[in-house]
Length: 571
Image 1 (cartoon, rainbow, N blue to C red):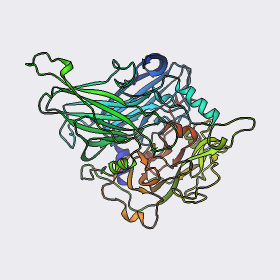
Image 2: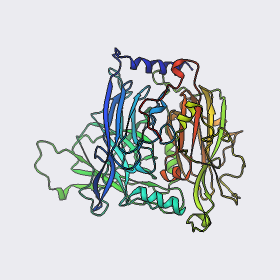
Image 3: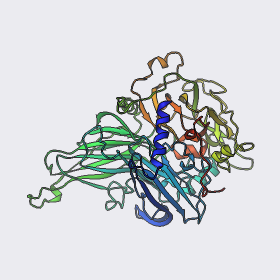
Image 4: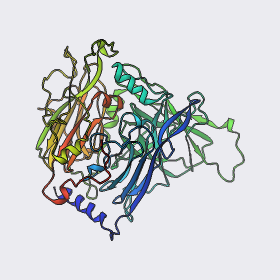
């Protein structure tokens, strides 16, 4: 509990005008439409300041960030600062109809938040419908002034954002899928920093190139901003050292391939070769797919180039070797499992791992797909003529038309939400084996979980095989959590907890639930407000794989949710 008080106290200190510890950084985000061309297809996209990807936010730990968002398009918009804790500041979190109503055409909203206890890489993105396809950008959090990294300072730092390119309007894609009940069409290409790269038709000029010097160490800030795809990433003939994930330092480990889910960030150190190699190297990313149906099985590539020595004569480019990386099979669940087990928190005096040891609240949530009945006089394209749905404990979450945080703050929840979300599955079954339930229908409702302030919470997320097992990347807003255990099959409450890592588990804000398996995480509910938790596959969120927590106010003034800002959007 003392750690929470310290963070809140630091937040107040940073808001004092005389503070020398932190500064205020101002940004303006104009939501506009502009034409973008990829794969020889030009279309109008929604973007920030006419840029795709959008501008980067750069700040130091402890800084205050103020971003005025002005909506100049017909689409409603909201921006989520993914991974920022937003301590006692839920009004700035951003998910539409959860913490705010969306910003309407010709309206604006100013997001105001302080970065507390975090350093590394996060990102911002639209948090309404599928506008995240083109509305996203990096958040780079540097250490406080006069503080160092727990590793040698890199020569340069470069954001590497994975995304998708769609030749058609993504809003039309999801609208059609929701109407017909079937799976949505897939993307046409993957991108690195908005560029598809040379492996796609008509894209050789749209290739991200990273120029490096021999004998230097570069930090690559990897961000998976893709709508629906987990990614493998590798650079030919180079080893990467992972040092940070989700803005939390990790025990360093080396790898040739990085696995990263939508919503996750990973900082890696790239040590270049000691001498000019007279070669170029592909950096490539392709999807990991664990579900059923179709997916974009293509590969995005960029190029790592070494700067030529000043004394060298011009090189014949046709004689320069090109090396390509080897990536895992696109369905390699075993690689994913082995890779994720490498992550550990530093768990030292400077960067402790404050894992909850005594648990107040325990939850078992089943995660997976299901269905809704097809409306009368309509043909549906989901399983067995139904409409696809997704759920947590068989509750497919229905977003209200009034923001949940506003309803909670005003005490006017009647008819908007209830607080009877089930702590365990109402109808237990063999979650990952046979037989599976004959009835795949879900319950559609707006139910929330209520947590006392600073209660210690353990959550087990159990994948199900209903309509196929799948790896689901789950993101929790407003909190980080410690991943204390994971495994395949059904979680065993008697035996599995004996193997939990309570010493140095990785701390994250987004975690992949293994296909046909489970993960367990713990956190302190030390942040008052209403906080979203959802699958970061946008299609699954659209189908209802989402829920929300209410964390009640604490006893101190700094632990209470303040009144909403005067410019908070109205529904």
